[in-house]
Image 1 (cartoon, rainbow, N blue to C red):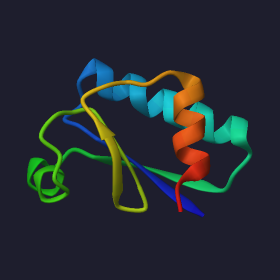
Image 2 (image 1 turned 90 degrees about the vertical axis):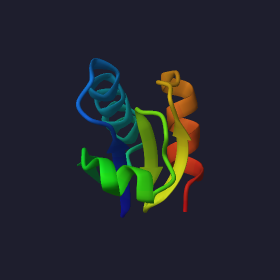
Image 3 (image 1 turned 135 degrees about the horizontal axis):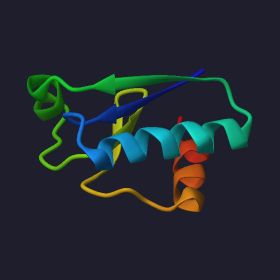
Length: 80
């Protein structure tokens, strides 16, 4: 099961990324668990300086943007 983590303080982009990532995971038909990380200390501990960011199993994949649905599916499917 993949743990898909959205890092952000709850801004509109963070909400958009959460919805887009969940939709991508559903389309891929994988087992996943969504997690929101809003604690600024945890976000910076993970090395993220710009939000929103996406991590899979605690591995940050990108920060500071909301990628397209196709990009998200690629990132999620290729993540270990």
